[in-house]
View 1 (cartoon, rainbow, N blue to C red):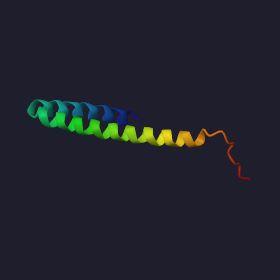
View 2 (cartoon, helix red, strand yellow):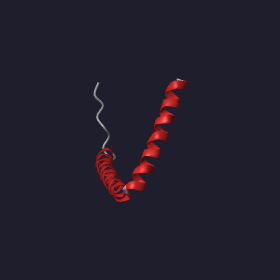
View 3 (spheres, rainbow, N blue to C red):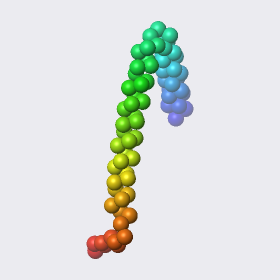
View 4 (cartoon, rainbow, N blue to C red):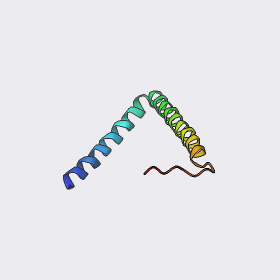
Length: 69
């Protein structure tokens, strides 16, 4: 387990260094990528919220639910 945790920590460190190198060499590309990911995540969040609201309106009706035996 210690090997796995050290491999994960090393991967995070290497990834952070790689992102900083990319940021210094081509900052516009990374900013565009972040913007695309942010828009994608916002769309997912909005879709989930709309679906959740539509389901909660159906399940919060005043009629009792049917119980199947």
